[in-house]
Every structure is written in C-alpha cells, then in structure tokens.
Image (cartoon, rainbow, N blue to C red):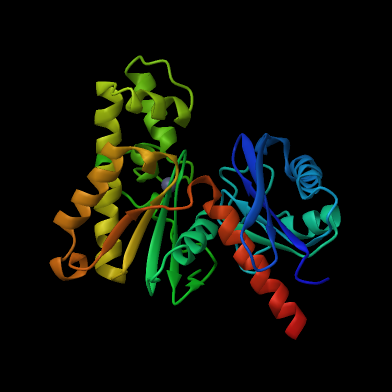
Length: 307
Ligand SMILES: [Zn+2]
C-alpha cells in the first residue's frame, strides 16, 4: 500500500450520508451524498454506505476508512455511547462492523469532533486552541487543543447542547433532562417552534429557506436561538479562553443566527477573553467532517505502521 492508496470517509446524518474519497495525506478528490435512514440500524446503513463508498473510489483500493457519527462516541472510539439520535445503534462496535464490510482499518469519530479537526487545520496561521460549533438539526461542539481533539474523561467533551438555559424552562430534551439548550437553539427546536406558530415546516432545510426568504417569524426565532447558544458560549469562552470559535452546520449559514451568537459572546464574556478572539464562519462547509475524518485516518495509519 503506497501513498497512492485512497481513504474513504462517511459523515452520517439522520436522513443522508455524505461520502468522500481522499488521497492518503492529501485532500478530498470526490464527494457524494446518498439517502439513508439511521433508524434502519447499523447493519443496513453500513452495508449501504460501504457499497456507495466502493463505487465512489471507482475500483481503486482503500487503505483506510472512517465514519463520523451524529452522537457521542465513547473511548475507545468504536461506536456511539448514548444513541439518543441513533436508536438501535447503542453498544454496536461500529468500527468492527464496518471493517468487516470494507476490509480495511476503520476509525469512528463524533461528527462535531471531526468537523472541529477539519476546521482547525483548514486555517493558516493556525489557532492553538479552537472550539467549533456544529449547529444543524442538533447542536454539537468539538474542542481542539494543540492540534488534538480534547475528549474528556469518557469521550463526550463538548456536549454544550445539554446545558440548561433559562429560556428552555421545563422542555423535555432527548437526553432525558429538561431545559437543555438543544430544546430552544437546534434546527429541530426551530422546526417545532415554527410549527407551533402554524407554519408548514418539517425539516431544518425548511427553516433555512424561510429565514433566507426573510420570513419575520423564522428570522426572529433564528436570532433568539443564536442568543441562547451565545449565552452558553460565554461560559465556554471564559473557562477555556480559546483563540478561535468556528461556526459550522446548516444554521451557521444564517446571518441572524451567527450575528446573535457573536454579539452575545462579545457582550457577555470577559473583555480580556474576547479582545483577540476570532469568531469565524466555518470554511469547509458540508465537507468539514469528511476532511477531519481523513486526518484521523491518516494519523491512525501512521501509528499502525510505526507500531
Ligand atoms: Zn439534553
């Protein structure tokens, strides 16, 4: 296996998977998206995506593969540890299952961590410490310190979405607690809030369309959602003192959402912390998690060859 071998990456979402191929040690060479349903379970989804990944590689053998998952990934990172968004996937050794499908070593990573790694290394000069927010249908965050993902004790660092905020009151969250940021700031929350107001929306994509068309209700809700997220981020900024915060995910493409986060942090965090703080939109768009995952596959293959 020389450096010409390819890497295959999968970013799993609830209703679709984004697939990418990269050269070992290099950038993406091909991407595609296929419809999936996470609810079909690990076996079916992994068979489907392995088939599509082989097709995307167009006959060239893979040297390694990786999967980014929309759920907390435990240590050792082989599968999801709390599958509230991935029913039926709990306790499954996803890495082993996919290795059996695709025939090469597989790394498994949380999607926000993968995005954070991709965004961190997409910049020059590079930050020392960065936090990347993935605000889409759900909210995730990844922390990169000195070029490495910070995982915490059990691999779930960055779950800011389950921080209690006053505005969420006693709203029930998917985690089993009440009043989480997730219930007022996520794409899923905006869908629910707009439906309560009688608007015909069923997905985060519908919310994006409404805000881009300057619907007043949707715009106001996107702004409020950003304020709540910004409020939680003030504590993160004061505690962690990052060089940079990168805002990724579908909601971060909305101006009212992003500007509310920025102003909340600049107003609410300690002035010393925000003086040189870079708050920037994500650069890699939908490919961020694929790029971050390819980086992890490269590192894992390099470790294997020196072991
Ligand atoms: Zn929660």
